[in-house]
Length: 180
Image (cartoon, rainbow, N blue to C red; front, side):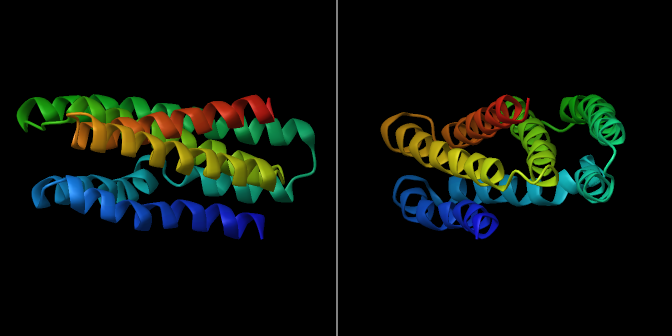
């Protein structure tokens, strides 16, 4: 039930934000945000090599605490190496192909990578409440900041990206604090 609520909360947020986006953003701005978020759903599994799923799988079948720590640290090492490689490639490519929000997109994709692996650490450890709470925190912050940035500031696409980055980072900090 906790996992269901966590998953639904993140999905329902997008549904509830549609009226805000369509009322305040132009069709082009809304389309741009949709492309960036859809692209994230394609890129994150590639950029992380889905190592977070391997972490989850091997963690739950292994009962040795030393091995579990090794699984987590190895997973983070792979994600860090992939982040460095992806960062170098990203910045080289964006020098040749001008991307309007390249810094914010970089921050969004990086924060999503970090959050994704931390969420799986929570799940693997059986901390469903931490997992659900983290998703709820992320969703709530996304909604609040989207309303503030998109409705009440001149930021439109930038506001959406900043709110998603902030939400992912705060949720990640929460997981780190909770799981020590």
